[in-house]
Image (cartoon, rainbow over all chains, first blue to last red; front, side, top):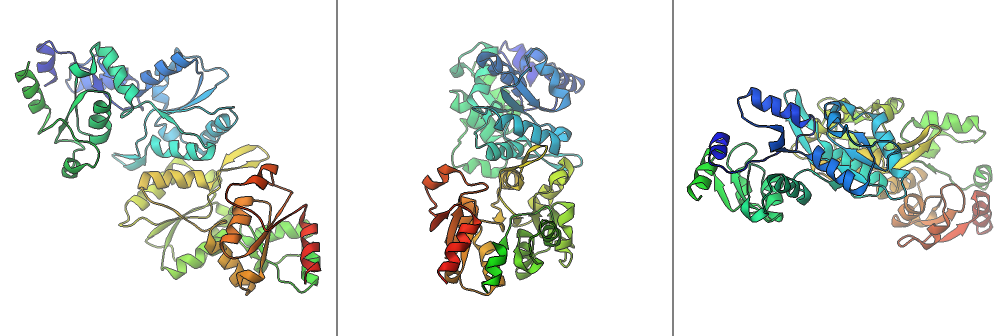
Length: 230
Length: 230
């Protein structure tokens, strides 16, 4: 399906909330599975956060996964004036959480940037708390509201559109998550298809707030429909 | 001041949110400082939780400080059907938080009991996240509301009154925390004095929701006033 999109001349951007690896590693994994994808074709929360940090002159203290650190290589991290939180996994230690908390509470106006707000996810060895849970802990302790830069944040989809170089009305989002993918893209002015694969649940079709522009059985069908209408 | 209260024939109960030590250890520390206090004169969140667990036939998984474990010695902890959260300090590891989360999310109706909802506290080596922050993390991940058994929970003050054997209108709370001490006691039908020591802040006197029955400069003055009115 990806190949057919590219062969048609359409531009393509993968939108992921992955924050346990750099885009380089993410792409390496996809290429090993046979997908013809380049780093420039991936929008992820960490680069979106870096853009925001540069725009606002923010110097982050990072509480993220070790494998994500290279994404922040070019960012000034001296004398931090904000905290960037990702899915830090084993780095979510008592000491690291207290350190991030102390920095935040010590700021005149605490700035907490979160790479996502997921509640939990599944790995081979079981369910794990996701970054959203730790975000809530720090929000409560410091009485602040985090700025979320992953899906479904509007600025995340704006980043993807900027990388594609197209306005929202010329882009279509295809995703399996009714809120993060479909709702986020629509709020940004894009149309959005929900695939009935992956995270899709039949109850999504009665979601109280989000209604996709159309449902498709899978990615191949989404591509069929898009190419037919060109 | 404590001695004068006892000598007058009034009953006394210390209400603490301490969850890093058993009442035995707490009392030992106070006695070493010269206070004539017995374990029976202390109301603390862990015994209040044990009462609630027994009443409702709940078998806890404990995520608490090691030093608090003896308080739960008589409680059936096999095949847990709830999670009890205290200020676990160094026990707040990534693995322990995931374990508590997995147990909760696996329950048909998750029951989370929290020994407090403090945001943070200060120790000699700096500020630390308190149990409330971890409570918020688990609440968000599992989409549940924790039941708080420490101050200012109504059931906490009801426990203290039951131990004293007096109705609320015959009891007076003296405390330095406008919300946890004064507000909690008043919601239970007690009168409450705020001392202008400890945590007291001048801004407390303009608190939007809680108004003490009176302010006193310190515990000695509170005792003077109470004994005068006997």
